[in-house]
Image (tube, rainbow, N blue to C red; front, side, top):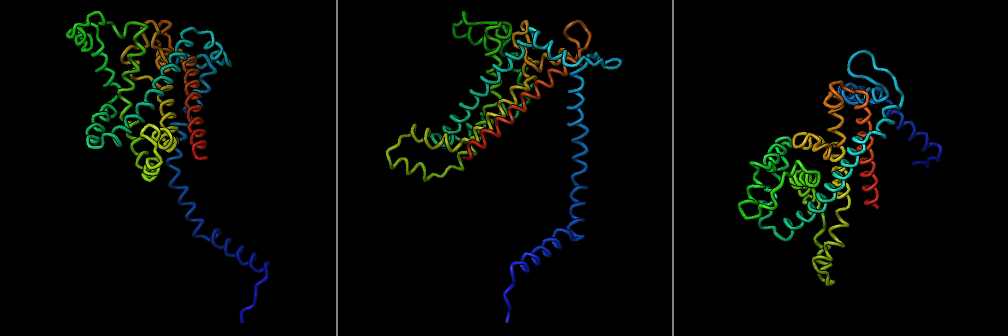
Length: 320
């Protein structure tokens, strides 16, 4: 007849089984194998991600033109950044473009996804394909195409305005302070709308249809269902899209560099284009300012880090 085990015997035996399970040679070999599999990726991460970040942070504390030894200047580059009117302009333009494009892409992505998946399901595949095509085109190619469209002499936009009798609206869109930023926003939204719509479409598939049926039985109309069911159910997706929009905005470079190069007169200058011009000597004569440019890289990295923190905060808040 089996005897009852005391509590001490149960704890001792469970401890023996645990130590045997996790301390056996098989488990150790598995851990070693796991470390060996991770080692190449970790080595690449150290060589091509962590080391460049640390070296850039070091260069941001130096004055260096690419030749000779860097001269340590402490935080002078950051102090100079605060008093540099072009740097302040680039930061403001970066924040404005990031905020405007993120808000527009988030709103239009959600509305378009609802229209395509709920209201116009029969033409959903066609509309999704048309809207997603710009997202798979390189931003450099898109920038070249839109630069031709905005061209004041041979551009499609001015020709179209002239053809329909709106000659008074013809304009040098990329050469005017008042229109250059809206023109860039249009290109950014055109290229990113399809991607956001696709993410929202995937999120809509996870919403329980019974919620809409119950709301309809309670007398809720389409707008009320959208406000009280669709939007709250997509909070995590919205947080992801917002964070991606912030990241893309803070590190914006290719579209602006190809279309305007930061002009006219720094009217579309962002941190990325100003950083490039400093690092490769296209401003302040022909002398590269790698130390000062590295300070802008650090600021951009900090802004991107804040965007990631915002995503984590929004995701955690949405889970509550």
